[in-house]
Each structure stands twice: as C-alpha cells, then as structure tokens.
Amino acid sequence: MQERAKAQITIGLLVFFASVWILFEQTKSYTNPIYTIGIIVLLLVVMLVLSYILIAILDWINIFDLKTNAILTLIVLTAFMINLTIYLLTNSTP
Image (cartoon, rainbow, N blue to C red):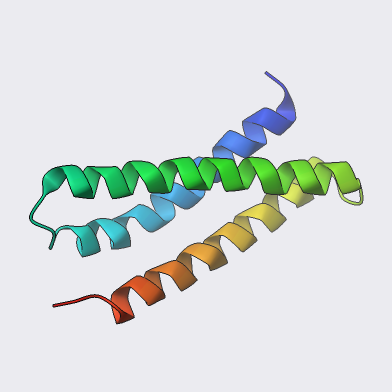
C-alpha cells in the first residue's frame, strides 16, 4: 500500500474517532437505532472521503511533504468536525 493511501486512511479514522463520541451522545436521543447507526456510518464515510480529497489536493500541489500534508488535513478536518458538532448541539431539539 502506498504511503499516501496509508496517510489518508489514518487521518480519516483519527478524525472520525476523535469526533464520534460527541455525535454518539447527540444521537442517543433518537428513538430509531438504525438512524443513529446510519449517522455514525455516514460520518465515517464522509471523513474518509474528505481526508482522501484533501491529501490528494495537497499532494498534487506538491508544496509540502506527505507528513506536513497529513497534519494540515488533520487540522482542517478536526476544525470541520468541531464546527459541525457545535452546529448540531446548538440546533438540536430537546
């Protein structure tokens, strides 16, 4: 497996597991467990796709090395998940 693919999968999983606990607490209020599982699986897919796209774009630009690209992607995706979590928590119905 290529180093870029390893970095993409690792960053996607790191961001997913770093953010899933807050969203899991949010989705426990839903009565349908399939809906909860669907949201969590959708989050995993979105994080893997976003990490793939961001690292591919940064690698295509070819300014930084792979480690720097991975760190930049991790920072961007973590900031995205923090904003998404804040949005979900502030707009949730009790």
